[in-house]
Length: 406
Ligand SMILES: *[C@@H]1O[C@H](CO)[C@@H](O)[C@H](O)[C@H]1NC(C)=O
Ligand SMILES: *[C@@H]1O[C@H](CO)[C@@H](O)[C@H](O)[C@H]1NC(C)=O
Ligand SMILES: *[C@@H]1O[C@H](CO)[C@@H](O)[C@H](O)[C@H]1NC(C)=O
Ligand SMILES: *[C@@H]1O[C@H](CO)[C@@H](O)[C@H](O)[C@H]1NC(C)=O
Ligand SMILES: *[C@@H]1O[C@H](CO)[C@@H](O)[C@H](O)[C@H]1NC(C)=O
Ligand SMILES: *[C@@H]1O[C@H](CO)[C@@H](O)[C@H](O)[C@H]1NC(C)=O
Ligand SMILES: *[C@@H]1O[C@H](CO)[C@@H](O)[C@H](O)[C@H]1NC(C)=O
Ligand SMILES: *[C@@H]1O[C@H](CO)[C@@H](O)[C@H](O)[C@H]1NC(C)=O
Image (cartoon, rainbow, N blue to C red; front, side):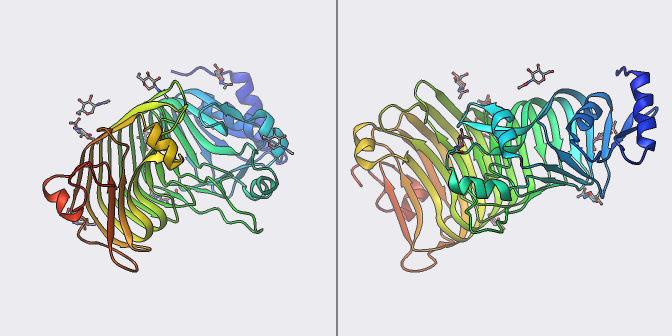
């Protein structure tokens, strides 16, 4: 049940008649509100509509100009029908000082979307207006760049039929109490009109999230297509086209001292991975002064690779020098991993690399149906360290049958 202030409603309706300040038009009794551009900062109108209306429509042809941060938490039964565009005004000084701070990996975000029973669909676009960010980042590599959308402590969220473009940095961060579906969405590679490199444009990142489904989407980007960050459980990723990415990645995990990271029950299935640095990947830190954790029950199944540098990867020495790794092996344990039915071509000769820390830190690693995975050039090569494969798995990796290999 919603209550709303009739007077303010009236004011909104009246003001929407005045051509210069169209804001929110509400149609009783179904509480559907239309939000159009005001000519100034549209964040307050959009926020108020989301808090007060069952259905918020941003019509086709409308571009909302978001100049101030959107704290859209605490929603309940809210549908956002985005047919037009939401564009985040690239006022760098404003956002670096006022974007919502996310301590994990030192991030900020334009938009916190949270609460329960939230739908966002309609065929519209979230535009991160990234060019100013790419140019500013080129001269300040510690610049905080905002994530477009952070789904924050939410329950039952459906995001479908939305495009995202020109992300300053990560496209999405998902931190869910329970259940999110994302079907289908399209993320397009930010295009820089200058020579400046566009870094860290992860597609979807899950963090402290349970029960997330991401499927039927096209993701063209320049960093992880989907990454399962600390404490991601029961995640299904299916039917994705990932182009240009750094892979479907578990991690990186075990980065921060004193933290224990869990990733459990993840399935990634029916993935087409093209022009990518990695395909199916698990990455965990080793060395001194890092964290710990567990990666358990992860399945990568039915992947088709096309020009992928490292199609199948376990790296338990991520971002760590080899000597540090040998002295201080990873305390993020990796168990019950299945790489199944992975085909296509690598960029070079290496098709799979399973590099684990010693002393049983990787166990029950299974590869099956990788026969169709070929080198793009040279002799097809599988490598491994500290992994013991058995049965079918061992046939492809003849050197991985005992722990003395290197
Ligand atoms: C967002 O708004 C909610 C509810 O008004 C408030 O409790 C919360 O502190 C705000 N979050 C941030 C990060 O400002
Ligand atoms: C919100 O969207 C969902 C999914 O499309 C739909 O089932 C539901 O009826 C919508 N709610 C309202 C109030 O229109
Ligand atoms: C996406 O939204 C557009 C515009 O509302 C609509 O025409 C189209 O059918 C939707 N597509 C899907 C897959 O829902
Ligand atoms: C670089 O960005 C950081 C973080 O946003 C900021 O604190 C710092 O002042 C910026 N440096 C310069 C030289 O602008
Ligand atoms: C993950 O969950 C475990 C167990 O609840 C907790 O101890 C740990 O602090 C959590 N880690 C993160 C990064 O939230
Ligand atoms: C993993 O899935 C199993 C089987 O459905 C379930 O029993 C277990 O609780 C799940 N683990 C987590 C961490 O959710
Ligand atoms: C492993 O995770 C999958 C979901 O990805 C789940 O269906 C399955 O039950 C889990 N297995 C175990 C043994 O927990
Ligand atoms: C293997 O994966 C390919 C590509 O996704 C799929 O077409 C094929 O049906 C899969 N084979 C099996 C046995 O599942």
